[in-house]
Image: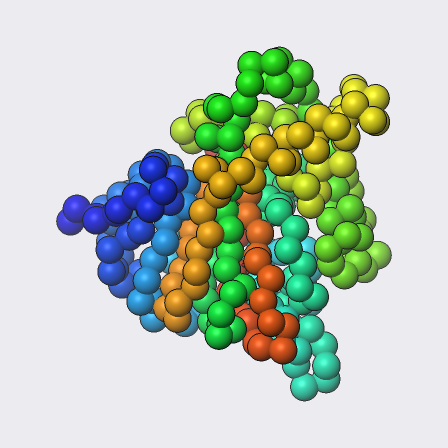
Amino acid sequence: MALGVKPIKDTFVGEVEPIDLRKVDDATVTELSKAWNEYQVLVFHGLKMEEADLVAFSKRFGDLEIHVRTEYLSREYPEILYVSNMKDDTGRAIGILSQGEVGWHYDQIYLPRPALGSFLLAHTLPKDKGETSFADMSRAYEMLPQATKNIIDGRNAVQSYAAFNKTYSVPTDKKQTKQTPDVEHPIVRTHPITGRKALYICPGMTTQIVGLPADESQSVLDELFEWTVRPEFVYTHKWQAGDGVMWDNACTMHRREPFDESQSRLMKRTTILPPSDLAVPF
Ligand code: OGA
Ligand code: MN
């Protein structure tokens, strides 16, 4: 079966024609993988997926990560992370990003072996707003002035989950903090499958370019952060019931947009790890 995918924004973001992701054969998974590599973000509409379906579908693309914030995992399917502002009967936040945070980030950039991708399924949506924006970090890298490329090529940057939580979220507990020490990754990430290069930094978690004085590092990072979210690199997804979005986490940064916090929003996410046998795991 030929999979129908329409580009939404040049070659960034593909909208997949109606498809039942509960029943996809191997050939369709191969086509979806190809489309995912090509577009970086795939948008699906009209999905009818329970948690078991979400896990089963996501597993077709790789092993799934169990997120370090175990307090926000689905009780039944720990491979699913809730992203939500909702609270349970005891007043406990059921999901991550519970406080209206809107920071641009890469999922799990703070891990030594970061995620390859994420799948986000809409469950409960506010009446309006609360969109999710995606930035095309490979195009952003490609279009950078050569002088800037010369400064960053071959350099590493420090990625800090602690920094993200300090600015945008609730602190981790002692055990989680120990599990997520700061790490260094190349600023220009080579996609482990397509070989495409992308800027692998984000305002939420990148704190320092290794080897540059702090003030110079900050000014280069600020310049890059401003550059990457220029409108030509960004797609903003307006959610409808039944939508799912799958993004390539090696070359796509994202953020949740603000919404009226008195309304409920619940999204369910799986996180796909890179294959363990890649020569360049990164
Ligand atoms: C995520 C995330 C944003 C959103 O699931 O990793 O950042 O719009 N979600 O819910
Ligand atoms: Mn995220």
